[in-house]
Length: 172
Image 1 (cartoon, helix red, strand yellow):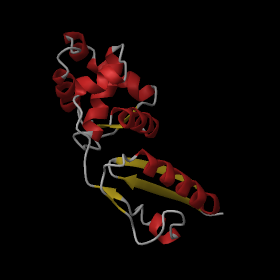
Image 2 (cartoon, rainbow, N blue to C red; image 1 turned 180 degrees about the vertical axis):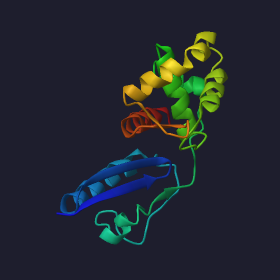
Image 3 (cartoon, helix red, strand yellow; image 1 turned 120 degrees about the vertical axis):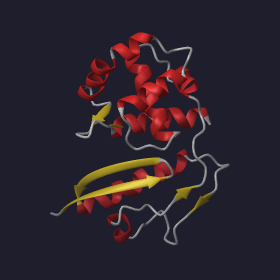
């Protein structure tokens, strides 16, 4: 069987899956349908000419779900930290990365961007976050919450993005 990799994107939400071609199609449709349910009813959504129920395999292989939203998230870092019930510096940094990914729409971010985002949360920022940033980022990469890029950039892992999407949906 042929292995395929598919990236589904709905607005700012993005999911990558990999598997056998025969099974991947059904799994991709299931995930896409769940993603569509996360879009609030007040959003403008343009559907592709093909039905979401049965996407053409060619569209999936082109890494396009054919659905886009026209409004981005607009939450502050402090709102995310509060809603995510952050208790540690690692939690605050994860929330800052979530902010950068979904609100600032940055798929990758460097140390300085992460630090600036944490500083925006004045009620939660402590100097120890800056002094322990290297250690905390390594810990988040090791735990699979962040992906460390060779360029010194970081990105949210798929699991972290999916968890964040649930948290963001509750905030709308």
